[in-house]
Amino acid sequence: MSTNLESTAFLLSKAKNGDSAARETLCSIYVPVLTKWAHGRLPLYARDLSETDDLVQISILKALDKLETFNPMGEGAFLAYLRKILLNSIRSEIRRYGNKSNKTSSIDDVELIDEDSTLLEKAVGLEIIEKYEVALSNLSEQPREAIILRVEFGYTFPEIAVAMNCNSANAARMIVTRALHKLAENMNEQG
Image (tube, rainbow, N blue to C red):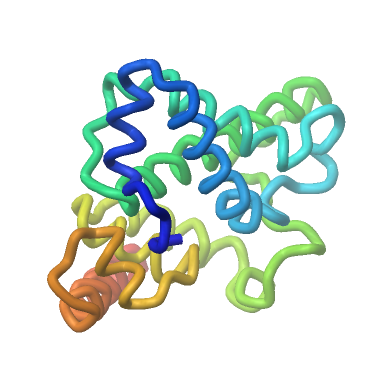
């Protein structure tokens, strides 16, 4: 990811100015990453005309259409922004399905994991994932971004250093370590 010839911030700047080639490059970079992340997050029962790939593409297009409101701090910030939009799209799709089915359950009652979910998701369960999401949202931008890059997208510390404009991989590792510690504290406070 970090070996791209043009930085994400540069591509975002060009895309803001209407450069369609920059938009296409951003899509080609982030569609595979988000598709991998989103796999299994849309429950099977909520899949009809909307598949995960569609939600990924729609989310990226939403982000690109709202670039004037996004302050690019680097690759990591944009990826965290995309993740948030995609997660909201998944939740909206689940709500839409629930409304079509005349179900009375809320989004909090709906499991975001299906049988294709990761071993981690199966092992920890929905309650822990919900605590994680709440604790993650309570972190400031830099720690939240560091955790998303490391835990959810599997970036290495050198990749995180590039994505977050850190001086070194060791600096990135320290940011991630501190962020994970704060995340654990936030989760423990939830009970």
